[in-house]
Every structure is written in C-alpha cells, then in structure tokens.
Length: 512
Ligand code: FRU
Image 1 (tube, rainbow, N blue to C red):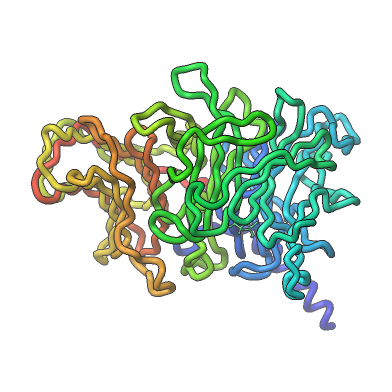
Image 2 (image 1 turned 90 degrees about the vertical axis):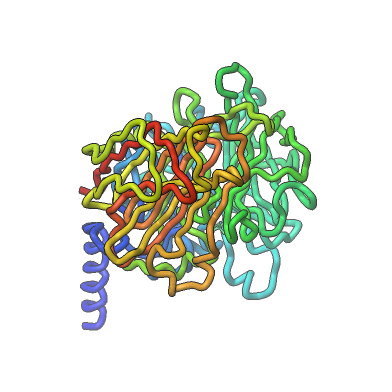
C-alpha cells in the first residue's frame, strides 16, 4: 500500500511539473525558469539540427541546491522553451556538476551508432563521499554521449577522462571547443585561481597544454569557475581575438558572484591576455548574471551567451515557489576597439524581437524636468529604449523607473556627473529573505560616453536587464515586488534631461 501511495505521489509530482502553468507570483514570463525545483548554471549549451539545447544544474527534489543533475530544455527559436526530462543523473562517481556539450561531426570519440551526429557532453563529477571523508580529489571530469539529439544520454564506461591526480579541491566546469587549426578538442577547466587548457583527439584522452591566471591576474577574491574560451571578430575588421570568460564567486564588482573576461590570443595550447595582468573587465555590473557561457556550434560566427540570473549571496533564499532561479535573455557578444583596449560588447539576441507586442509609448524631442509618466503597460514585461542628449541636459541623474501602486520601484539610471550607469532595487519589494540582497546602488564603471546616452532595457516580472552605451555596459538585476511593476516613468533629478527619443513595447509571455 505504501508503495502504491508513493507511486501515486511521484506520478502527481511529475505530471505537475510537466504541466506547470508558469503563472505563479514572480514567475518570469520571458526568461527560462524550470517548471519546479532548484536550478543554477546553464550547462551543455549546443546548437544541433535546428535546436538550441539548454541543460542546467538541477536538483529535482528541493528548491535549494542539492545533488546535481542536468535538467534540459530545448528551443527552436531561442526564446520559447520546451521542458524535457532530466538528461543526466548522478551515479556512483558523484553528482553531475557544470560542463558543456559539442556536436562530434567527425565521430572522433567513436560514439556514433546512427546517421545522426552524436552529441558529447563533458561535465564535472563531484564525489560527495570523498568530500565528506576530507579528501581533496573529489572533483574529476567525465563524458556522456547522445545519439538521439540530446534526448537520452549514456555515460562513457571508462570515466573519469580527466582525473584529479594533483588533488586540487576546485577542479571543475569543463568547456569543450573544436580547434580547427590544430584539429584538436580543447577543454578549459577552472582550477582554484586559474584556468587550465587540455587538448585531445577524441575527448577521452586529454593532455595538459597550458595555464592562465593565478595570483595577480584579474579578479582573485573568490574561486574561478565556469570558463569559456572562444574566438570573436573585432567589429568592422577581419581581425579575430580570443575571449576567455571566467566566473568568480565571491568578488563581483557589486558583491557576490560575477563574470570577468580576458581578451587575447590562443595558439591551441595556452591563452595569453593582451591587457596587463591587473586589469579587470566585468561582463555585467548587475548582481544577477553568473556562470554564463556561450552556445557551441552556432552558424555564421555568432556567439550567443546565456547566464544564470542569480547570485550565490542569496540565490537559495529568494521568495519564489515552487521553483528557484531563471536564466538571462540570450545575448550576442562581439568585440569592439575602445579607448580602454578591446572590449566585449553585447546586445539582446535578435530573436528576442519576436517577443515584441504593442507599443505603449513613443516620445520624441521632449525635455523632462522631474518625473514624466511614460505609460502603464498593464503588465511587467516591457522593452524600453531611450536616448538622451547630454549637451542639452542639466540634470545630475536621469533614467527609467518601473513602479506599482504600493510605491515599490526598480530604478535604472545614469549618473551624469560620475558618468556611470546604476541600478537601484532598494525599494523594489521584498528583501526580507536575505540581508545580502540590498547593498545600495549597483554601478557600472565610469565611461567615455559621447553626447548621446542610450539605454536598452528589458523588464520581466522579477528582473531587469540593461544594455547601454551601444553594448559596452550590461547590468542585470532581480527584484520581488508585492505587486507587479507596470508603471513606467522617466525621471530627471537636479535639472532637466532632453529625451531625443523614448519608446516602450509590451512583451509577450513565452509560456502562453
Ligand atoms: C557555479 C558552480 C560550478 C559548479 C556548479 C555546482 O555556480 O559552483 O562551479 O560546477 O555551480 O552546481
């Protein structure tokens, strides 16, 4: 009888998650979130046969972190997601931590058993028993393969493929790429305070070829995690540089988890940064964009990034149920020559334009003094673009405010004196769940802004993403209002601001 009740309960839970309504309080409407339970990093992002695969760190039994599985979702358009069954489960070698996936077109690993190209995933095994026993070699790398376009996975029977002979505690998050010039697979691995590079002809046998990082290189106040190494063109040139993304926790510019990047060269063995070692570049200056990496195998040289829209400072406490966490929107990355050297710039991937619904405000050449109501969208999901003429503006700060009738608001603005963007969620709603959630304003670095300041904002029920100054600045922040923030205003404090243009569109939910 007990077993019957159990089976019935499990069936109910599975059915409930498969048919999640996505209408709960704070439920993101235009961002991916799991139907139920805990999610962290995006994993195994690979494009194959017209499908974008998103795997993710998943604990199916609770809304806090636990024994890690790879959850799975598929999109054909990069905005709407279909939830799939769990892809990879823990086994006697350990939990399945973060990693990546590639399409093995030449069947170099020998896993192919049909006309379909095999997908190969590489992940970190985390052995909880080894950790509990006080050992330091409890993380090592394994692989798995799929011959049915990611639907089912088989683990390689000779795992691990990279063991932890040196016994380093933090030894994880393999990101595999194919390196055409050397005809080798390359994996970047986060090892404590640096990244290691290994090469392989078949993803089974790996040779260490180089290291990057260590004391004095980039931000070093936390553990290095989730690397990603890829080539990228400098806009408007034929020159290609290599970019290395490295997430770090803690030590972000505004507290907790954040992602830094390096630009340089890669010869198939080791990465060299162009900038002096002490230089730190942040990919995002908000507090909710972590562990992000890019999709493999995207055609036409595009580099599409997705991050986990949370922060280890409070991720396990945010007031959402029956799930926790969501991902950022997909963003296309590019390189640009700036006065500070070569920078990564980003924009919302063009596919997100498919979310646009009715325009709910449109202004041109208007001078604002104080507060200017732009419009009530009747819903929180909105896309806003504004352009301000600095030469015709006297205000010390201006920006956009999303508010509700309870007086709660999320503010995104530009500090004209300090020439930096900021976000302010101090009065955006519930923050009682963690003393680490509110830490004053979040700031971008000082910028060499030209005469016009441009902001591109995308609001969802519980987040805002700012891409400003033509992609040189990104800020991503979550919030938890008691009622949705539907009222959008422009504000100019301490003077006026000349709006060259301001436009707002409602965005359609991806779940309906
Ligand atoms: C980053 C991270 C990874 C690890 C995973 C475990 O958020 O700590 O380094 O593989 O989460 O869930």
